[in-house]
Image (cartoon, rainbow, N blue to C red; front, side, top):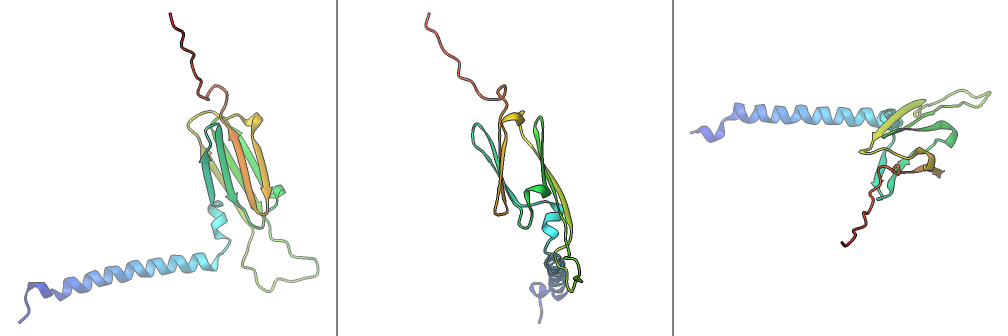
Length: 148
């Protein structure tokens, strides 16, 4: 009555494998939802653009101030680090804390040397925008062609 097409043990083992993967996915989602500040633990979300003359980095850093951030440039590496502290006003006790103290550090390595002397950074409404130009030695140059 049943043939090879209806191999129930194989079918159920595949369903069990899918169930295990789904359980893992939901556990990871649950842990990230219970720790909303956890994204900063590994670093803020950034967009990095090559503008031709240099690089522009935009990082979303809600809840931080410019005093909480540190930017450093070392040859070909830009490092963004920071810390968000949780301050409780004097005389108050904590009823619920979902945003804890968080530290992060992210480094970005570029294919050529950067010019830290001409770098600029702006922090407005939780969005950090950093422009770092290429070093003068790294910029492309046009060579004049003479006719002989």
